Length: 88
Image (cartoon, rainbow, N blue to C red):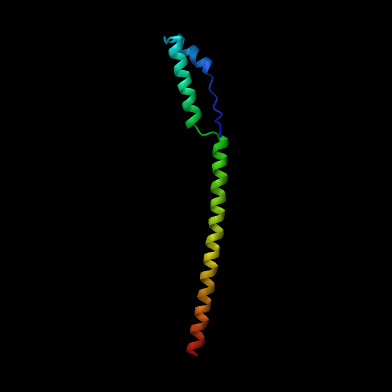
C-alpha cells in the first residue's frame, strides 16, 4: 500500500541549500528521506487495515473458544449424567 506522507521535497531541498548544502547533496538527501518515509511510516489507511484484520482475528477466536467451551460443557454434562446413572 502506498504511503501518503506529507513531505514536500522541493521545500526541503531549498532549506538545505540555504543551510549550506550543494544542490546535488540536498537533492540526494531529499530523495533518501522521501524513500525512507514512504517505506517505514504507517498511514491512517495502513492502521485502519491492520485494525480490521485484528478485529476479524479476535472475532474468529471468540467463535472458536465458544465452540470449545460448548463442547466441553456438553461432555461434562454427559459425564455427570453417566456418573449419576451408574451410582443409583
